[in-house]
Length: 162
Image (cartoon, rainbow, N blue to C red):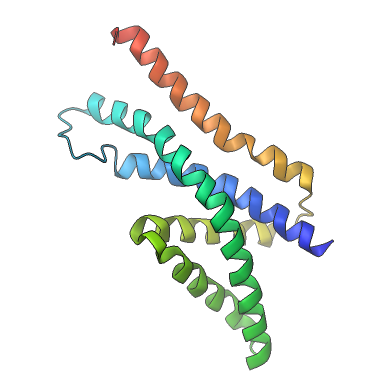
C-alpha cells in the first residue's frame, strides 16, 4: 500500500514538474538553435513554439528516469539518515542524491531534477493519500500544456498566415 502511495505521488510530481520544466526552459532558451530574436513578438512566438518540443522530449525522461531515481534517492537517504541516527539529514541527503542523478545532462537535467525534488517535497508535505486514479488524471497536465501551446501556434499561423 505504501509503495502505491509513493509511486502515485512521484507520477503526480513528474506531471507537474515536467510541465513546469518545459515552460521554464521555453522561457529561458526560446531558440535552442541560436538564431537572433529581434523583437518581443519573435521571443513570444519562439517560446510558444519550443515549449511543446521541450515537453515532448523531456516529459518521458522525467516520468521514467525521474520517478525511478527519485524513489531510489528517497529510499537511500532514509536508510542513511536512520543509520547515522539523524532523521533531519534525510531531506539534505535526498536533495544531494536528486542532484547527482540530475547531472546526467548537466544543467538541463539538474534543473529538472531539482524542480522534481521541490514539487515532490511540497506534495509530500501536504500528506494527502495519493491514489492511482489521481496519478493517472495528473497525466492530463502535460497533455493540456502541450495542447494549449500547440493551439497557440496554430492560431498564430491562421492569424499571420504562415
